[in-house]
Image (tube, rainbow, N blue to C red; front, side, top):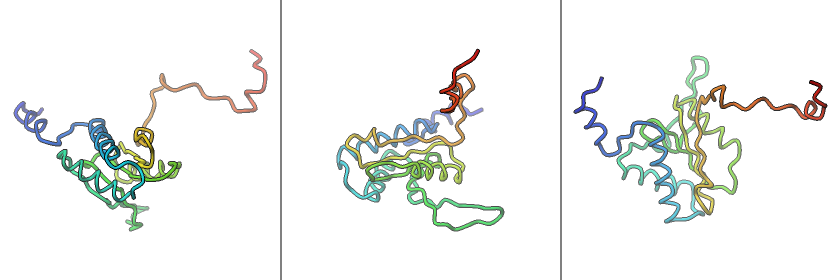
Length: 165
């Protein structure tokens, strides 16, 4: 159990954030600030650098172009995988500037999360008019509770057959 003094010190530190939800809120806020000032149309590297700067200004630890290790069997492979940003060692941020995000962009963030052992990532596409349309929050190892799962869908063939109950 932490003492009250230690709790107050850590929570009072600039940039101290308890959970990934709070971190993603800060990242999204910084990204919106940048997008409002610069708009769409710049290179990914420009947005990445500005985002790293803004997050550091908030007192957060930011690693840019963090190497993502790939270990297959017992061999560590140097494949050149890099996460654009890792914030406070807990959230992966992948910056994009493209007309449309594709499933491979989502898969890239999921792969980085899995390989780094992290739970939450943000995929931020700055090439949009309104930034909220370009933000995707991605969670690794997410499992829905049975109550929240929708019933399995019927296949197209099963849906066209009459229900004989």
